[in-house]
Image 1 (cartoon, one colour):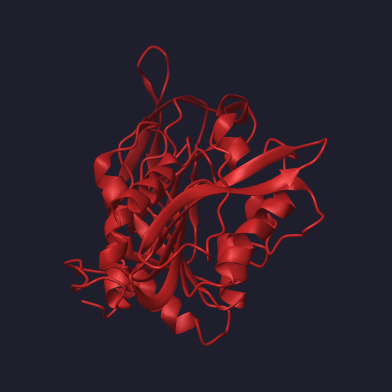
Image 2 (cartoon, one colour):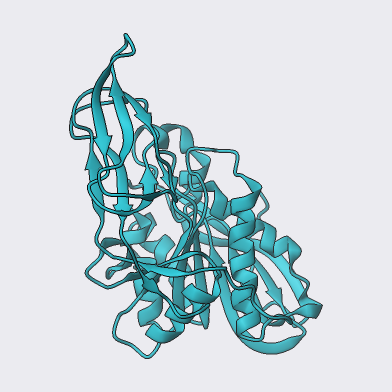
Length: 338
């Protein structure tokens, strides 16, 4: 790994640079965080994209890396900053992490996404969060790339937070302009948009922040269509704010998702056979899976408790009673963007 350091807001106009920011260096832990900067030839806003907050969500990492390579500073107004991997140890030591918890930092077993805005003299995860936060608080816009974790088949959608600030509407606009079919609102009472998460603390610091979810996490070799979904969403948002020329591409339809998570548990132990997957629109009572025995007999039918869409299918093979099989969401009203 290169030892070249970088100061993201010191890269010259019309230039691009890639390097590393020291996170922590002491007897207990020592590691750095990669950062790529494309500083446009014309002054303008700063947008940050992040990947690897959950380090085995590989789609975000690949998309953030590729955007740095693709962007031409001579065609850019403003500054683009890519942090392809926030949780570097989690990426590098993904083997043992797979057996523990993919969302945690193996250095201290803390969740970086519950460590914002960070602490300068804190644990490695708290310092890691502060390094990211120190960049976000100087930016105008932020997109966190997610892609479903190793145990998830995940719906493509955007997430925005409403914290009661003047940036709420900006974040909602970004979530729509990204161009996905579904938009999921969030509030501080919901786990993934609550205080101490990156998106909430970025919003509180004055940086409009959203999440793009695209990717089948269980596929460790990312599919191009989902990598491109993150990239296209970023270009749409940058075009909307005048950072790139052109008009955003709109989806054919776009709906909000209801914020109530509906868990579908296994009615009994056995071999799990999914009959529905992420993005499938379901009718109430529809058969969406089977629990079978090793003789091939059907032990249980799994039915959808509501009319809605599959947010997550959990592609495990053997399940115990009450183990999660799906997370569903109801489809809400049109967003009004298209």
